[in-house]
Length: 345
Image 1 (spheres, rainbow, N blue to C red):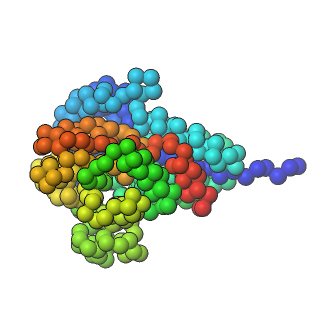
Image 2 (cartoon, rainbow, N blue to C red):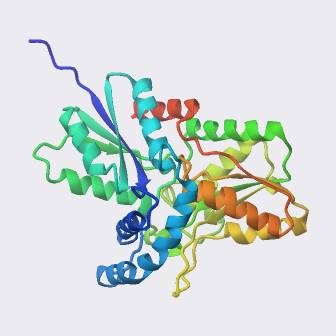
Image 3 (tube, rainbow, N blue to C red):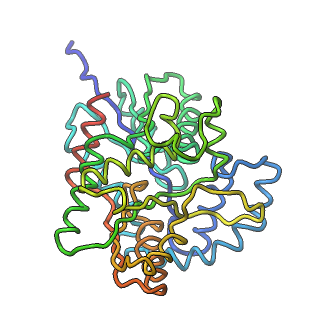
C-alpha cells in the first residue's frame, strides 16, 4: 500500500467580528469578547455582571453604528473577508503539503470549527499563527488558551506549535515598509505616527516576574528578559519600520490607541495617540502619515479609529493632512511572508 501523504495544518486566527452590524449581533460579540478573563482581568463574579449587565448594553448600540460605517455592502466585515482572502492566498502559496484554516477567537468562524477542519483532514501536526504581530496575553495568549482548551477533548492530539509573535520578522517589516514607501512616493509628510493597540500597564507587569520592566529605557532593545513584553515588541517593530523608511528618531512617534476608559482610571501604555496628535499642529506638524503595525488586517480600529476619527481630531486642532497606510490584508508580499514564517517552523 502507498504511504499516506503527510500534511501540515496551519491555523490562522484573528480576533473576531459580529455576524452583522445590527445591535443584537454586536451585543453578542461584545459579551464574548469583554468577558474573556485575559481581556478584562477581573474576577468572573465581578466581570460577568458588570459587562453583561451594564457595559455591553450601553456600548452595543454605539458600536453598532460604527460597524455600520465599516461594513462592506457585498462582503460584510473587513476583518472576516480579509482573513478569508489571506487563508486562500496562503493556501495557494504553501501548496498541497499544507491545509490552511481560518478562525476567529470570538464569534464566527470559530477556532473550534477551524480546528475540526484540520482534524478531519488528518494533518500530521498543527501550526497556530495568531495574527497579532506583538504578543499580548489579551490577544495571542487568549488564542493559545482557547486552542488548548478545545484539543484537550480530542482523543488524538497531534503535535501543536504556536508562532507566538512576529514583531521583528523580516517579511512582516518589509511588507509594511513597502506600503509606507508607496504612500511617501506620492506626497511628502511632516511626520510619521506608528499607533499600536493599547493595553493596561498592569498586563505588562503581570507578564514580568523578574520586575525587569520600568516602562522606560528597558524597551530600547529586545532581549531574552523582555522578549514577550508587548511594549518592548512595539518599540522593536517601530525601530525596524523607521529604519526601513529611512526615518530619523525625530521624524516619527510611537503611540498607543483604543484604551478603554475605566472608573478605576488604571493607566494604559503611553503616550496616547489621541492626545499626541492634538499637539502636532502647534509644533508645525501639519501633514502626518499614520501606520497601525499591531494589525495585519483593516478593521474598526484601523479604518474608523485611526483613519477617520484621528483625522478629524487632527484637523480640528489645526492639522492639514492625516493619511492612514492600509493594513497588509492579503497583499502578496505579506502572503509570502506568512508562508515563509510557517515553512521556517
